[in-house]
Amino acid sequence: MSTENEGKAVPGDPAAPSAPPTPPVPPSAPPAPAPAPEAAATHPADGAGPQEPPTAHAAHAAHAAHTAPETPTTHAAHAAPAGGWPPPPPAVPSWGAPHAPVPPGPAAPRKRTGGLVAAVLAAALVAGGVGGGIGYWAAERDDDGISSTTVSSGDTPASFKRDPGTVAAVAAKALPGVGTIQAKSGGSQGEGGTGTGFVYDQEGHIVTNNHVVASAADGGTLSVTFSDGKSYDAEVVGRAEGYDVAVLKLKNAPKGLQPLPLGDSDKVAVGDSTIAIGAPFGLSNTVTTGIISAKNRPVASGDGSGGSNSYMSALQTDASINPGNSGGPLLDASGAVIGINSAIQSTSGGFGQSQAGSIGLGFAIPVNQAKNVAQQLIKTGKPVYPVIGATVNMNKEGEGAEIAAKGTGGTSSVTPDGPAAKAGLKPGDVITGFGGHQIDSGPTLISEIWTHKPGDSVEITYERDGKSAKTTVVLGERTGDS
Image (cartoon, rainbow, N blue to C red; front, side):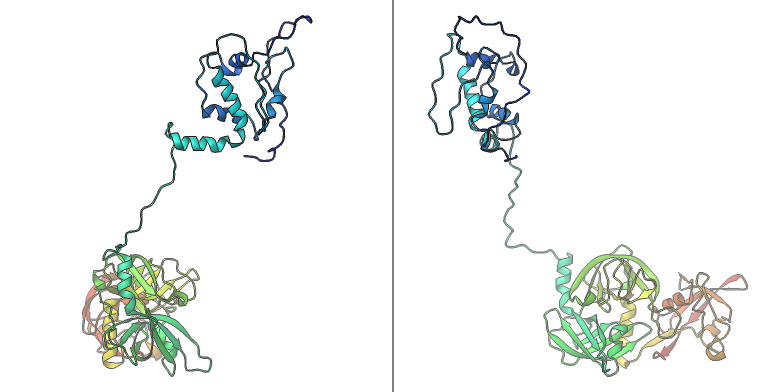
């Protein structure tokens, strides 16, 4: 409501209703007293029907005809000339002034007159506050079903508890067993990074990614900080570059460490709920959620050209994973570890641990594989890899994994008397299936091989001279990352 005209007289309404012509009055005849009540009763704007008793709605109607609040002197500007139509309304006193006497009307019936005069007075006297008046009236009467839209909330129960199995409950139980790893190299620059790891056993072993601790593996320093704020120095027990798994041990492991329970990654299904815990961009103890969006996703953490690249047949999740989440646990809905968060797909292209943010494509090493690697590292400090004894082309994709014509340094691509040779494979054969999984490239084949253990018998489907055939290979082993 505008307040620009408050305290000032408002000009007369130029759109007053027209009136029928009034016969001229002889000059000698004194003007008759203005029958204000009767004129008001027969005003065309009021209609000819019966009138309802004045209520606050009448005051509201009088107020609605104006664009700004009126002062009590405004009605005088609407008065018609003497003898004209409509006759002038009764004079309204100024605020605080005594009421002037109202001339008596003719002896006509005075039915509803007092009510109408009261309505006119109400319109003049309460125009400035009619909005508030109607609001108060509606709140008090509530006759028209008008009620407040305010909703009162109850008090929060003092005994509120989160049910077991909720994300909050799982996170609260798992967080004490997750640590943020600070790695610094032994060089003069002291370069390093931040990652995550989780408690593997009560002896103080921590499982994480190799790429988290690689910079500090030779002469650097490592520390692990838990959710309670306590920090412990750590040392590398063993690293597996190909698996991208490493095991640390706290130098002064405290009592009461809470190892995280390990699940079964082979039983994970697409659509299962996931919870990731880590330190994205250094923000420790961050919890994110999602689902398993795919399984057996072949992922190379490098460019897939060989060397020290890491390969995995990964669990894919849309839980938010960013740099710093690496090495942290991927949990199922029960709180069991089903994978180690290791890589993300970024819009910059390629898999790896770049500084790009999450786009909902994260990859975790299945815990069944990571468990086998961790146990081997704790036992011997060195990784053991299953092999087929053949060199495959790592650059071709889409047609399987082709056994190269020559091996490294011109040697045979099929190791004499090795697993592939015993299975009847030859250079030029294209492996299209391994253990029931389709193979479309060399990295995919390695990812599938490394989900097994040395000594496992696996069925292979291959093509030779345009013909498909099958054979069974017994996997050999290789120790170390050389």
